[in-house]
Length: 265
Ligand SMILES: Cc1cc2nc3c(=O)[nH]c(=O)nc-3n(C[C@H](O)[C@H](O)[C@H](O)COP(=O)(O)OP(=O)(O)OC[C@H]3O[C@@H](n4cnc5c(N)ncnc54)[C@H](O)[C@@H]3O)c2cc1C
Image (cartoon, rainbow, N blue to C red; front, side, top):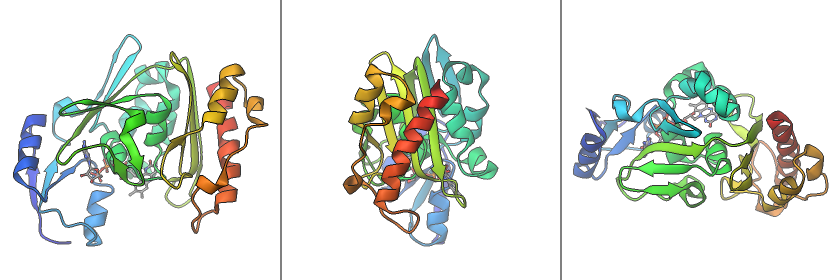
């Protein structure tokens, strides 16, 4: 690991100021990706600006059906929130099946979506729920936030502060996980929201998380797993790697979508 300077930020403003002062600096949230990348000498930030001790970035707040999850909220807190489970059990289930207990107690929703690993779970929930990503300077719709593999719409030094969404009428998530890491080889999040049905697929797309228009149309006219029987999944847009080829993933996308609808009820 290369030498780096550690800063414990006390507020969002403090963190943004520290980041602006250090061009080669990086925000540190759970460190589950960033620290291991640094240990492998694949990243060498001059400064680490720790967001975990900023009270405004942690916790879940609920106002009617509007849910706000602070960027530095660990997966374990999302999984354990009774108030959130009463409104949207699918996101609690998703968080409860990320990695292992250590990863769930350290890793955060903000770090997960800022990293936008193509096999991560949260991007499917954020896109599937039609959530809004709040940053220190603006709000970004989920449809515009995820722009490619490990790519997002943030500008230099911009920080995710929260994820907000309206609780859906129904939602479900199913993933076929890599048995070692538990990352999604394919994961599908389905939601019936006030603005229509949304289906987001992670772990499978060659450009990262994506929505499946064919599934959305089929479920909008008939919310049932059987409605997906006749809908095809185009393998040419899917990943092939040592875990699974594109054709195998195309089959998984449909199987996981059906399971997600069944889980949503
Ligand atoms: C063994 C293992 C298993 C895992 N399994 C899964 C799994 O099954 N499913 C899954 O989805 N994930 C999995 N993960 C990933 C994990 O859940 C974390 O979400 C992920 O590592 C990043 O979150 P973090 O909070 O640790 O971010 P960090 O590692 O601290 O940061 C990641 C990146 O995001 C940037 N960043 C962090 N916070 C912000 C912010 N608020 N604003 C802007 N940029 C920010 C950092 O600068 C860095 O570039 C696994 C990780 C490990 C190590």
